[in-house]
Image (cartoon, rainbow, N blue to C red):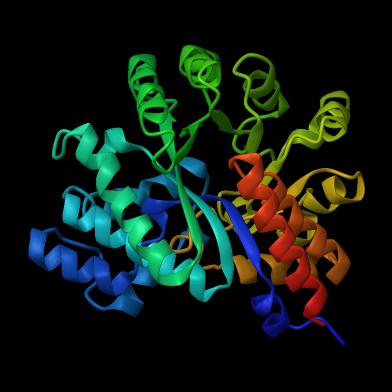
Length: 341
């Protein structure tokens, strides 16, 4: 049977790199904006989706500016809970069986307390999981442009909620001039308590950013890792160690991290045996889904069904979950993949 988008949609999938504030439903945004008296760049769902589509971004900083519209609506516990809940429903509709969604709680204070900014989306994820069966976990992000003390506070929150749905710490934001090493203590604290870390690196900066994330901060996965190929020695080491790469093809095209879909280095990383996972980064700003990202990999980069199955399993194998839970999910997904032809 030929590989179709419909078949890819049916496959059970995991998503490890997606931002909560990049996944609001446009209709929900308009409703929240009316209630909160926030001005948005458009007045209908379709027009709003088009206004927030990042296809015309000139670089990562341009892309990140779009998030100010979504974050402005995420300043109350009820909004955060609803957005997280709807996020899980949308993931489940895409046959995503496991998802780790990330955001920076510090962007939602002082409108809320840090506790509210964490517990309200957790409540939404749990409600969505109970309704759909899609397992949803939270990653808390520090931002490179914030003071390291903020990252340390968020690292402590990861530890505090580590048995209540929060699985990891991440560092996101503008790479240029904002080294991850400045936030190394936050990574160290999380890792010392047996929890996990990932890090945005090699998206807008070169392979030295990836090297720093791994060897200075101890990141166990790399967000994007787009420019890893520019340092063949590091590339060989990352692939040899099977450090998972959280690849976001459409996002990388929109931020100009790569020149086009056909030249994305994920093809190279896959051919070299890298631990590749495919993710959306932002469903709203990139106008994509997990199914769409797999379809792009097939159509533009020649990924076969066997390769896509491998990518799917990579996603579940790379999940920040206790080994017993991970093994159960993997066993179920492996059976499902074998049954879908």
